[in-house]
Image (cartoon, rainbow, N blue to C red; front, side, top):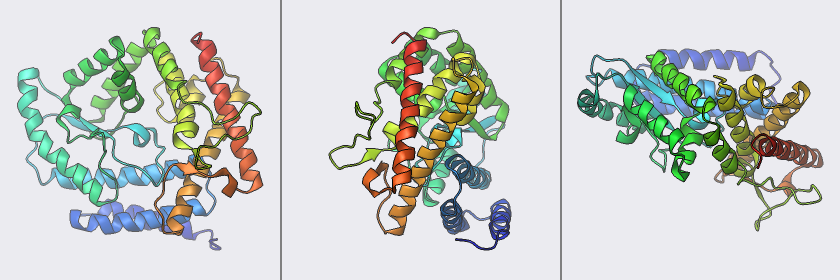
Length: 351
């Protein structure tokens, strides 16, 4: 435990300065390693789950922005507006230590004929950024949801049409993509392009309750791991997947509430704060749900830290038997709040 209360502040300032002054892509992996070491120590020092994931995400944002800026200098990019989009947990500012890349790129184009050659100019740049991020510890996305994929390096009109297609024809893949792309946040470049896309998205979803109904149906597929007595229900390995059957339940419900209310917030706690009342939650309920979500994030981070300390590979599964009694009680109560959120979804969408 750190005994000097001013040391974390000095370390944060030193790392922020190092990130802002980074001028070599080759030096980035070493700095990223130092950043991970600091963040692990900071989180182990007792930060709450919400504060910890915001801190991790904020530093990852700074590193990513610097990598984008330095990589852009190596390419002859076309003289049009463009923006790097953060998606998924990065977009929500909810990154843990176990994360891969979810990103996209949006650029201005006069029409489809101009978009095609512009994309070819942007792709080598985006692909190098993806690789530079991988070199710094951000794994390449297995599903290829990255700006270096031509499918996600699109003009403003192409992104607009993609979102319209997903909302108007909500097939299973569209609903899966919604859980990632509808958490978009403009990160670097002409931020207004990303904000325009978000404005379009909110106008469509708020006006399309049938789409939100299907999102709610999809969200309810994840069953809260509590048995009929309200006790923790584990899998065949005596574990609980705290991402799929824990934090995801809060994230999915908050996303639906925000999209229905037209709320611009992307972070789960912020979404609940901005849209929870419109969804039928009392102020005290919102505070309780946010506290529960923060506890789940804290336990996920603690599990990852324990895996790193033991020389193992961090995953999403946690064995409740390994928790102390207090944390088991807290986890049970947090999951009960997740169940209440699902009950609110069922009520709101008559499911």
